[in-house]
Image 1 (cartoon, rainbow, N blue to C red):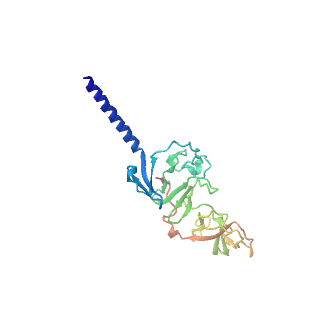
Image 2 (image 1 turned 60 degrees about the vertical axis):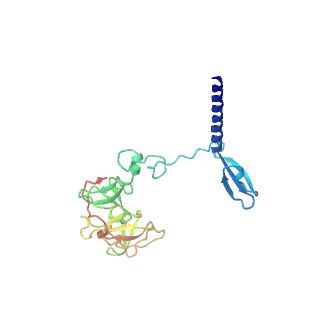
Image 3 (image 1 turned 120 degrees about the vertical axis):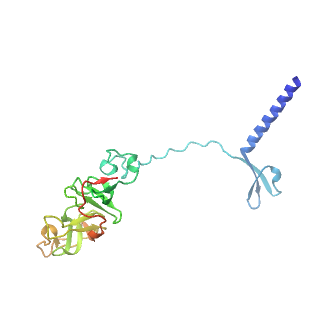
Length: 258
């Protein structure tokens, strides 16, 4: 019986030794390095190497490296201006009174009361305009913004006094003064000026040099001067036809956000 126990112990030690060697072998990669052309072949043992090859081995996993330097904290997905502050007016996209990950799921789509699709919500307070309370919407097909004013439901960013014309009687090339680029401005189409139908203009590029004008709606399309002073802030206006605006104006209130 004693011989049986001894034999069993020897067998167990032999098996454990084989397991340790196998585990160690699995953590080491062996190869034959060609001294002439630098090629390396993965082999099982040194007997596989040729005369002009050196047998080399390396561990599959090296020693633990030093800890790296902590990276800079990234910006929150809702922080569109990167100031690390919740600016409710422009960053609360879902209008829930907070700036969080719920504002990062893409822009809210805006519809009017007649289910007309208007575009993507930019701001619900008209932050570019001095007339607070408007809803600013981006129109993808035109690549511009338009503000829907609550008081009359018409699409405009500012009053008509931003649009000027080179010729008398509000004719000829148009200019936008003190205007935001890529924002739609309205000319006419109000009860105060029934003789002037609504027209829409956008400033694509501001210029830094003076340009002349001789008429504006605020002066009933006649400045009363043959040579009015030029102004520098603004630039040439591009007219957007009402037929090209992808919804009917004025829009029906209230607006709906989805």
